[in-house]
Length: 281
Length: 281
Image (cartoon, rainbow over all chains, first blue to last red; front, side):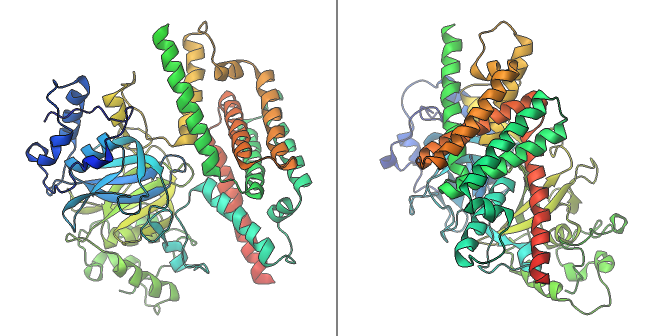
């Protein structure tokens, strides 16, 4: 299989008018006419020589499929899970848009081709057994066809023990569960302004108190270094900094995902610059 | 199917001597003798009445299986992916230890039963199609049989473009990729102390500069609120606070995962107290 991978990750994406593989359901990529628009007459590149063995190394199941999990690179949220065949994986690598193989329709499909909520894949990871794949990327919008941010909003704990009012709860990891809790407290302030305020609500209501706490906690974090306090104390003070700063984000209507995106873009840039400086030296 | 779910999530775990389902490979839970140690003669509880329809609502494939993804509740890292049948899912719900169905050995297996690196599941999520499951939990140690933290350490981007020296790179999301970068800079300081220091290296070497920057950035974050600056500015200042505070964590040898665990335990506790106060009022 000789396919130019000019568009792999660090290079511009494939022309969207190309519709690579769009009508193909076959597993044998060599035989697929859809390859035409990726093929050229140029000799096999260094990159191609690496991708072909990679695709062959995946342990495809008896139907030629492997599991693929799409994950938000900033939040870590598992957005959705589908299956891929060799063509779907190749298309994802070349187009940088998360692409799957639909078992019910026996065809490739790119998440977002209808909704325009593409998942822009920054890297693909294979597991130790080479039969499970992560698409790490940034979604353009909600991933679930229901409009939810991710497809995983049915909590077994909620069903068994504590059904929430709105009937759903996303699979949130710690930082985002905290953000959600702060956001709930903010809503409760509007809904029931006379209720006994929690600490979070007091902070949300009193900007002076909030800013004084953020400065105080940042200072205490520094003092764990300056006064050589133990690691438990550092972790605890950092937790205080994070919590209070996240209340400020909530007051300002800024999401922690936005902050993480700033960090990612900043470090991607500094990484590129660092590599350039290494090459020039 | 009448099984008491006395141990589901909010209650103590099943006695480890019980070995529920350990020798069973069947998909029909009604017929399994392994159910004995979960069964009692008590009437079907409110909880049981909810779990049975839940298990029946999963869209098991033609082999009676569904995909299960284990995710670290603090870091969001996808730890591993396996398959589950109805018994494996039920065992996970009742024991709170991530349990799968091995397709090659045709038997249930609990991650950690050999290595003792269990994944302690705090909640289980079903996707919109009910054919994919997330086990959200805390691992006792590295999940991969290779000793790696997760099974996803083979990066396609690395293979194609930029192979790292050690040949592997975990699927890290933004905050943890930043932590890893800071950690690399710290190692480089020891390996090559005379190299031109980056900003991160300067901060790692100069505690006074680092603490002064943390206090300065916390102050600037507060000023975005006090001086009514725009959201972009708040996100940018929060990114600065996070980055500089994470350099301090690195100096102290504290991982961001430890900080997130502190936050999770703190908020779980305050949640319990809040529910109690709601009930008493």
